[in-house]
Length: 390
Image (cartoon, rainbow, N blue to C red; front, side, top):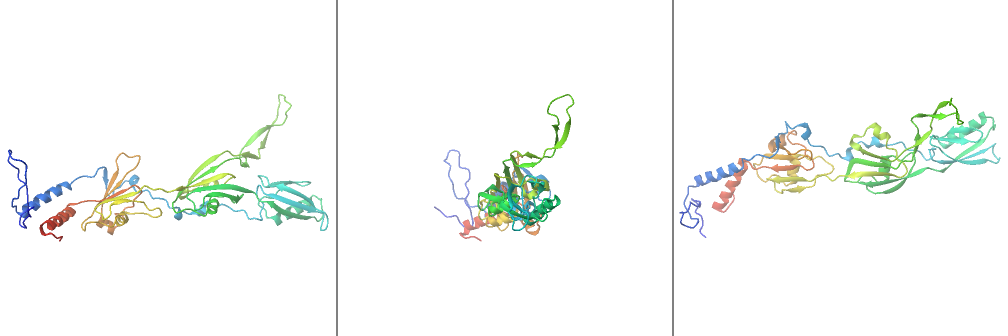
């Protein structure tokens, strides 16, 4: 094989029509060859991106990057529910009440399960609401009622917690320890349940789904009529009365911790058999291509924002010293064409507005430009002619 002289490059003129196609060496002025080559590569760089073209400054709001919610930055105090101290009486608890005429006398002992309204029915006294009271306060209330009704002059009353009401809650998904946990009734909020599961996992999202099996008795919000005379007749009297309790049905609640409101918080008291599911974040990957040192598909980081310059750095940085033009291609499921956001790396390094936020699924392409093509062409020709890169 013959070498190409330093002062000429080889081209192939059109062969005669009756001769086979072959290539020959013809001296050519280097300047003309370079101009022809550069013209070809410049024309090849003058394409247009497919999709709707924008810049960081005229990008419509619907095409702005959707932030990936980070559960570690969410104000979880809004999820906190009231907890019931161990010495406080709550609905469903079982207490023992011992009453005697005085010290040294035999006591009457009865056990009571606290009803939905926090009340117990005591013999000779009637209903007393002890729910929410600490044990010594409940003792004092019962003693006062006995004295006021002149049943005893100075009774001795002892209230003992025999059984605290507990419920079982299952926590699954993006938590450190999935499982079923027994929790104190009245202290079974979503945040408490996640705490029992040792907190959120690294890949936890902000969406939590709660399945409530139903069957819990709650106060009825409405009045309904009751028949006063069950024997019949034309003048039945209907008397308005309040139905004390009703039973809830199964419910599925889906909440986003990043946008939780007060109404949703009130719905988050857990019931026996409830299931709490914390979503796992599995964001679409990010593709970085073009004039970067390591073009590839990269996992989108879970717990931080990612901007254009971050993505280029992730891919090893730009591969050309004069690379500047960047396209961010953003696709949306409900849009037929992607949005193409054209920006400048130089401007992005100077201005945060140009260093736009990315979202999972974006493609970042560092584009060829006349400057990058000319530099690469000069490097290639220089290597071919002199055997070295300059």
